[in-house]
Every structure is written in C-alpha cells, then in structure tokens.
Length: 192
Length: 47
Image (cartoon, one colour):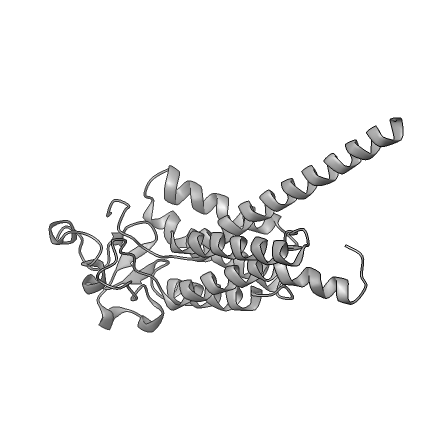
C-alpha cells in the first residue's frame, strides 16, 4: 500500500507540474516492459491466487526480483530508476540471503497482528505474504529486513525495509519528473 | 469538412493512444513496485 501511495503521489505531482507549465503529461519511455509482466505474473499467481506453496514461493520471489532488477538496469537512464534499482537490489539481497523471503522480527511483527495470532507463528515460518518470521540474531543483513514502522499514532501499521523506501522514492521521482522533462525538450527545441 | 473530420479522428486517436500508453505504463509500474517491494501490513493470513 505504501508503494502504491508513492506511485499515485508521483503521478499527481507530475500531472500538476505538467499542467502548471502548460504541457501535456507523457508516460515515461520504459523499455522491455515484457520483463515486468514475466517477473510479476508468476509471483502474483503463487502469492495471491494459488495459496501457499513454500518451496515454490521461496524460489520464485528471488527469481522474480532478479528479472525486475534486469528491467530496472535496462531502464536506468530514466530519472529515479537508479534509486529504484538500488532499492530492488537491497530487497533482493536480504530475501535471497534469508531462505527466499523477507525477514521480519517477532518484535516488529507484534505491531502488526495481535499477540494471540503471533503466538501461532514460530520463528522460521512464513508471516503474511512475502515475509518470514526470524529472530534478529538469525537474520542475515538484518538492517535490510522489514524493520521500520510508521509512528505509533498512525492508524495504518506496516513494516517496511530500507529497500522499500528507496523503491518508493524511485517510482515517485520517475513519475513526478515527467512533468518537468517536457520543459527540457522545449528548451532544446526538440519536438514532442 | 472531410479534412476537419479527419483531423478530429487523428486527434482523438492520438489522445487515446497516449492515454492507453500511460495506463499501460502505470500498470507496469504498479506490478514493478509490488513485485520488487516487500512491505508487510499483517493484513494477510499468517502461515
């Protein structure tokens, strides 16, 4: 949800900037889009449609993210894409190093679900969609795990990683800056 | 008259193409961030 919020915020900002400058907003010129579909659709089917298959999921998530890394690298010339690439690489690193899932500590998880629910999940078991419950001392690259939380007063509680933050900033910049790029094209006299 | 009609048709097709292209890119970016990110809100069932 927080990543989609960043995407929407970037789009709204880009549209507002383009409108303010009197230009029409144009979509980023992404290449090799088929890679995104090839990476995401299997992940979507396994995680959200077909239910839990631990062995398949553990293999699929790093594989899917590797394809998304390639996509981001092939589009690295676009604004924000290098930040998004770095965020994806960090998430890929911590997921690949921890049994194919994003680690989350019991302490962080306790902010997301009632204690009674958490007591039914043992360390090493899946938690939520892409996460695995792991003790901090058993987690590789613990600083890259889902360890950040919004302020306690926030009604919406979500655990996110440093990689997630970079992905959010990257997609925001990618869409927001489209509202400014057209000015550069005009100033160089290049027709749109 | 025919030229104007053609102009309108061409303009509409251009607008539609741009909109469809933007929607397609937004769909792709949505899949990209959901696929690359891994935030957890506890909304899903624990396994």
